[in-house]
Image 1: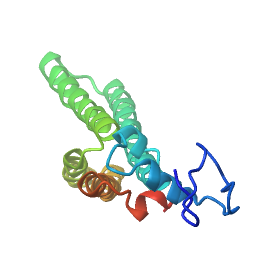
Image 2: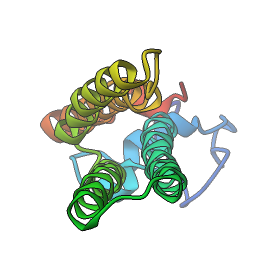
Image 3: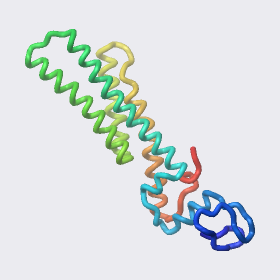
Image 4: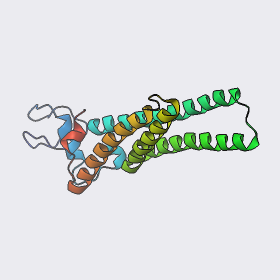
Length: 180
């Protein structure tokens, strides 16, 4: 890495230029190390601006996991109060288990893949689920999943925009270096 002030070659991890004494700018160090598009997606994900996107995406996935567990617990409580025969019980098990499995699968896809498609599916599924639950209970219910979907859409699109911009130009975008 070179000093942006005098051009002297700097030692790895240097905080000051040994020639002119200039403080090495962290964002400039990141840019020089990543010049030419050689940064892996994993390393790119550790940049401060990208890390905040990643953390928000992971938070959305955690909300989906919690909703899946709450759905199962509520179903178990509801089933303990009802006496269903074999066919009705089987259908109830299939419907509830599939809802929880869908939430977990979408959460994993979102968390590991940072996929815009999974974020959009979470949003659409959440809206449908919220409308169904609200109609059944005659009050607003199930709004956590579409809320997680909105944030997942925002942050997966931002994450992928930054990554694609880096891959296209080979230069780290300013938003990837700055937090926020």
